Length: 412
Ligand code: PLP
Image (cartoon, rainbow, N blue to C red):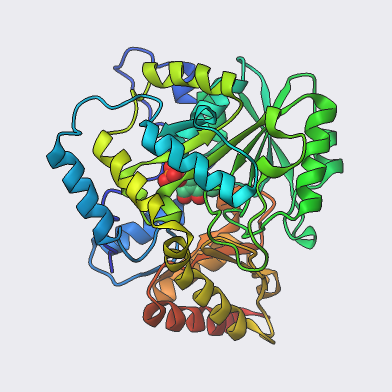
């Protein structure tokens, strides 16, 4: 099955050689680093789908539902009204106010329009944040496992990613000792992600306070990617923006992609100190030139629907998470980190005696079920596979049951 809208979805691949071409920049050629990109499984699943094979594709972090019709109607009305010319580069006033109001109400931290830059998705906000913090050769600490674009985005901004392993035994939360040990005189920022993709870790107050202390001790920025802020399953979302004293060194990444099922609309934001946002508006003028006006109007309308609507979009992932955890209870081979948030479940497959790439490859070959090896997200999640809870329940649950029986079959 090819889910709606996934046809053009792509992940970066390592550069191919271009013998007859004029030299490309070192930066672009080495964007993905030198290693294996770890996404072979994903491409194989896509190839099988292209050949007409029905694959239960549990690799992709995208909703199985589409953007709500009322948001699309507002988008279309805004376009018909003529909001199709160049739009305000920092974001329309209405949208910047709406984002500031959402952040203020979710974090209880007074946030102003001047703290907000509207961007084409969270990914563009990440790039802007790194451009705003790094000089060439500066280092960024990235807790490992991490979202797949982080290292390349750091390199695109001229920086050097430095991976800091998080232990499964610590719930994959970053630990102060490991962060401190990785700091050098080139370190400029820590890039965190809560709730976390791929691990589902939703950082508690202690973890956030630890990260703040490390940042303060070494005078670092903290770039906090919180695009899954509506998908928290145990406690309410804790934002780095609300850590006392942290505002002056925090850049917060937000997005409508996950909270409002608007992945294809490419709309997100960066929050930061006013002077940094002013500089990053200059960056936007020289890179994206803003986000289309009719998308911004649709986003303003979507935000006006408030937290009840956001909870409705998040609900299927909570339901599927709970159902999968119930199925796993007492399983002789597989364990899970009960996710604190997000649309994924990390399965600990170590008792099968297989590596995650082998497990995932055999599962795809024999059962036509695609999951991501933990190794695709760094080194620390080896021995785990990430299951995206992004198929309708009627397809997800039978596929999940097959994963459980497959693990029993292959375990020694
Ligand atoms: N950050 C994380 C952790 C993600 O998982 C994603 C998308 O999957 C993004 C950022 C980028 O989201 P977008 O650019 O669609 O807002």
